[in-house]
Amino acid sequence: MANIITLGLLIDKTVEHYHKHFKELVGITLWLIVGASPFLFSSYIAPAGVDTTTPTNETIAYLGINVVGLVTTTLASLWIAACLMLTIKARAKGNAPDHVALGKQAWKYAPKLFAFSVLFSLVLVLGATILFIPGIIALMANQVDGAAGAALGIGGVLLLFAGAVASLYFIIRYSVELAFTQYTLVLEQPAKFSLKNIWTAIQSSRAGVRGAWWAVAIRLFVPNAIISLIVVGISISVNFATTIVLSFAAASLSALAIKLIAIFLTMSLFIINALVMPLYALATYYLYDSVKRT
Image (cartoon, rainbow, N blue to C red; front, side, top):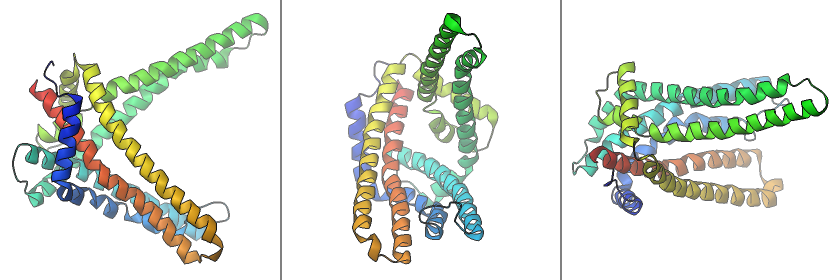
């Protein structure tokens, strides 16, 4: 792992590729807005969400549209993820991607990506929860008064704190070890769904990280942290500016104007995500490619 890509070169290659093929990459990720379009309709129905005063028919429509939006956004995200990987690899290898062919191919990988995402999330949640159980049991079982009860209480709190630390370690460790699983599923395996292939991809990702966990973790964390800070900064700025405008003009705004502002805020979040999604994919791909070649 001595030849793993340096952090500086990783950032340089990510930015260079993004700048050079910006239209191509964003042309893929902007489909996120199409997938998320139901959320725009729900923002129109209830700009501030629903509560006990919201009419029943509006509440049902709002919740139903949001469920549809969750499904379509998930499908769009899976397709975008696979399409980005295939497109980035083609460009990185000096090939001109056939977007129509890659777009069709990307759909074939969606079931595998979805299955891995669900399984990975379940394992992380269950694993992290189990590590909290000893502390919770100790606190709930403490029925003793006096000094012994105080000691058991302190012990329970310490166990709970240790569980929190262990859960954080568990999540970070396996998030790094399995960071390349999706890239292996899409770029190294056939599109056919198979739990065996998913397990093979998991083992391949762990093998690639083995012996260089810290090097990989730093190269994953720093670019993603920078990108996330940019996203948070832009999102906060947009929301802050909108809040200022509303505070001065709320009294003069019509109900339609408020609905349109709510739609704008929802859309702006998806546009921001569409613009930065390629950066996450690029940084991970070039790190994955470097690890595979070392």
